[in-house]
Image (cartoon, rainbow, N blue to C red):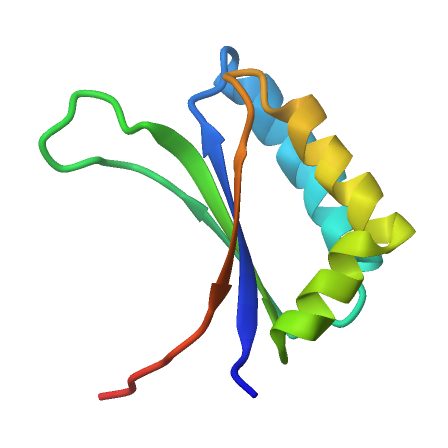
Length: 108
């Protein structure tokens, strides 16, 4: 069984400072508390998009799970639903993109 991850890509917000305050102060703590079964959470702030003046996304979050089944169980839980709704609420630049992926890692 392969590990899985939830990827959430946030478009450029209309007010970066307000988004960052809500993301750090509300959303990250909520994700840490309510996303049951997660094994890792990576929150990346995009600083550059090669070949573009402005990156299409401001932040990309990756939440790792031991399996796709564990990820889907989390998303269908009350905590998963609440956290996803909050992601949509704080994303003032448009609807965030939610992706589910199987993970393959190659260490060098």
